[in-house]
Length: 176
Image (cartoon, rainbow, N blue to C red; front, side, top):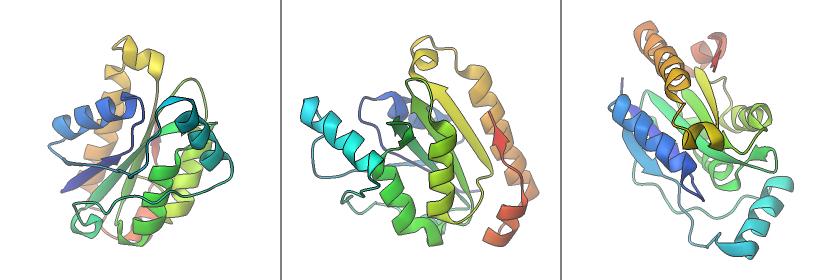
């Protein structure tokens, strides 16, 4: 199964998880990028404003076609208990090209379920698996059990060879 790991990371937490998943699953990695800066107080304020008011930023074209992959992972930080705006924009733009999806998020404390619901809506199907990690877990390097459960759910999806979007919506997702 060909896997594409897409992600947006402002502080590096989501990038670290994306890189680990790509390595563990022998997947292609593709950052979601935008031309504007999110550094400093103004950048942080922009993050909260876009997340709160469902504003999609302009993102750069990606280097890989999601339709060429059996599974596309979307990684996002949580901003204001919601999905970050760049991954949401990616999901809205490319959702119809995604055969099967999996979602992962990094967060200070909470907001994963809301973010996953927003991504489900943008992609238009249920994910085969989801993964929520706190920044504290990442800093403590205690994410191995959750990563293993998420990766096992993805491997189970690979073995099931469920290929269509319609079939994907029938498969329950594994919450870790």
